[in-house]
Length: 170
View 1: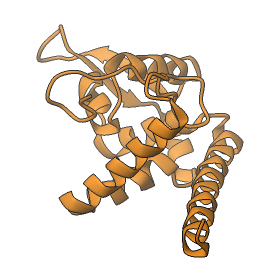
View 2: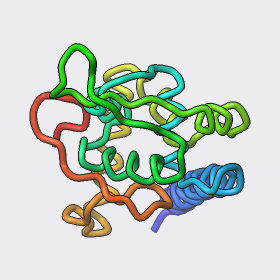
View 3: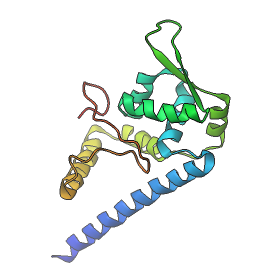
View 4: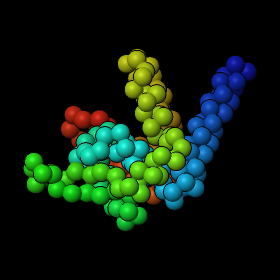
């Protein structure tokens, strides 16, 4: 194998290591701050920007399946950080907002890897985003992981495949 190709492969490995280390570091900081997983901290950060909001809108903003977000909210509610309630306008709709305790954690919490990734990806051009997507699809194929459920980063939660025309369409 030519040296140039070996150098590129070494660079790919190093960059994968960097990504994993960065995400793990953000996740560890989230755990230290409030005993939260990265996705839980991400949810309260998103809620702090847009609460009260519908559960379905929170799922869309986080690029997660609504049932995944419901599981995250269950854990946030059990910790007293978020509250769900029926919408005053439409009783079929469930809204969610942070509690005072949840707002206090947001105020002292670090950045969240998922939020940084989302912000960065949304800032890419369509071409750049396709390059990233195609590269990741190739890596998933190399590992034979196409059917592996997409577990949230450093969390036990699994994101269910989304259907329809919204974010995360598969």
